[in-house]
Length: 205
Image (cartoon, rainbow, N blue to C red; front, side):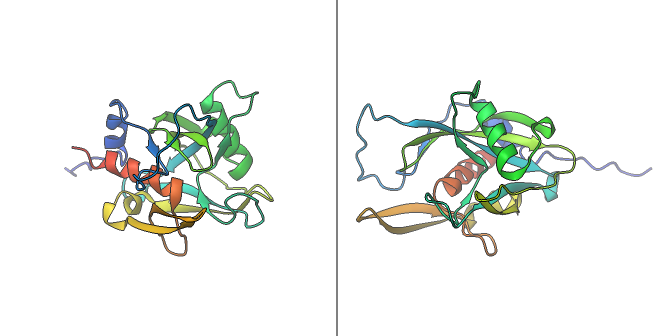
């Protein structure tokens, strides 16, 4: 009699950790000398953290923003953007943006929950929406917004040894941030910070 292989959900620990209350993250996490003003106004935004494939083959879909954009040109990012007045909720924002930016049909997306919110240096309060993609996905980059759509193995992103703390000048001051390079892709800033949070959650017993 053949022994049946047990299939393990690669994000099982992350899903279990969603039940726990976790503090929001921030682009300022590694810069404790920065004092943020109370009552600051943040703009609501959402990103989709789309995972597809099972067990060892699980991947995260990421984008490389157009080099022609005014803000964050050429940076690696999740599909997402600011919440529009016509969006009924923050999940709708993430699904709409993913549909526009990478051609991901919302009918093939299973929303699993929310990762901790993240505040960016550009004044956005970002809600990362964790989701599983079912079926076959044929990526379609939005012209003028996205230069490239690529996949990154979940195993790479869950390996905490892959993350580095680096720094660069921003508005006259040194700013420290996380990075998690993958092949030719330099993943850093808010995207790397959200991924680092997910990796921490995956490491919980």
